[in-house]
Length: 112
Image (tube, rainbow, N blue to C red; front, side, top):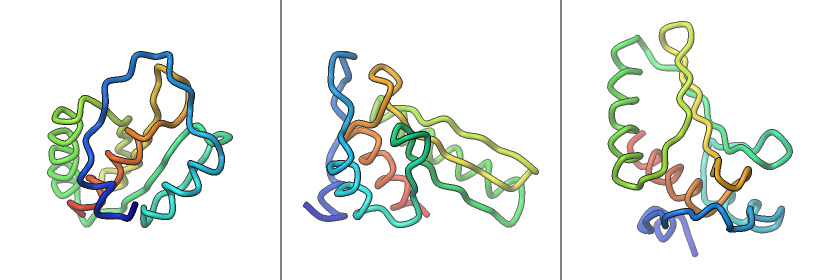
């Protein structure tokens, strides 16, 4: 798999019974994503942005929202100081990371 293959995939519905990705799988997926990091003991995929102004962040959030709705997988978005955005991805139903988190991250990277 490569960056483009990850971007081309679509999220699969989560039943909540799946096992979170392991350390090796997370590292493999992370290699395909520029700018993202793993935090919280490998349960959270995070990226931070600093935009020029408030409206640029809001427009970006709206584009992320479109991706999230299309994929049925929604990140936590944290807007602070009017132009700083942190995106947190996690598959909440399993308390960890799934392929869906990396797919959405790849799609977000494609619009930056």
